[in-house]
Image (cartoon, rainbow, N blue to C red; front, side, top):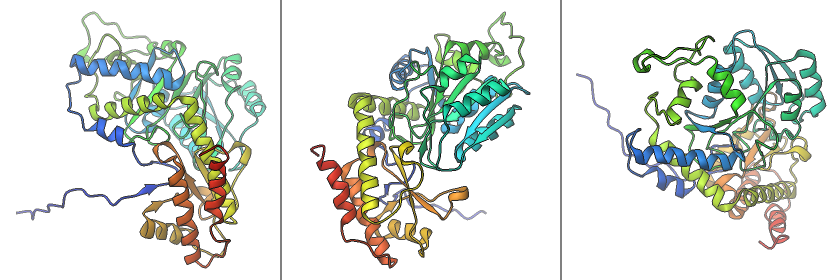
Length: 413
């Protein structure tokens, strides 16, 4: 007989997550997730689905009919879009300025795309002319790029990218997982064809559901491959002539049928996650998008001032730094991972490590979503100073907190 192992009830230690995400979930979102479950075709639940679509059109600043949720983490939405749009051999351009450009590249390659990448040094971003020159040369079907890449803490300017893509008849896709509602991304105004995100960054929700929006042009491409699985196929249905999407779960055409008035069964909706997405959007809109942008921008100024007040050096192009994540060089002579572990052990505060060529070189410190509050930034800076002193780094006492506080005092906070 197999011996039973029964663990204690969950009791996670308290953490202040000041890394590049995920972040602490807004208590209002946690409360929404505790609401009773409903059946996926219950009229009350389908009305919540409709409300989510309305809310996220406002979050994305779009009139796109097709604004819905993909059950899965943020990369599930990226893969759903790509596997539904890309056919083997399609040309895809990925401008890479960090780890997540490489992720987009891999997903596109797994879809059979002929991918071409252009790269800049980590810590820099692209001049739009670099992107246009490459589009003009290779004429891709799709250009896929991140708005903010937390691996480098940089934000790519996108105001011109949608227009450039349209000029050369290329689709534009933006992964805004790490940036949306922390900085502006007016989808319609900037003429972006598709944008996808997750909840676990500036929206202050849990990972596990991924909002996506796309326009009618994308919908036409998806419907040119429309198939419905045999067990639920309506009588007389004729499949489109295009090749069947390689994934059933990530088939956007079938997901569109579920989210539309047809309500054609696809999968069992992640009820509690939909509740979370609804509340994340509601909270963000109640604050106001511009107020949220301003809150993140102020936090960024305070974090930078505080870190520099401690004598630390900021990583990357400060002009294009993401407002919600700051890269900072680890002081010479100390073990960065040991210092991170001490902050977690002694203060319950998590800051981020780094990837690729930046591994062991910088920390990534976030202030986003629910955590993007004055007291959290001051607490993080005070804990970092105390930790660095434990690692024999000398610095002016209290300068970090004082400098950060000055940024808030300057705007009357």
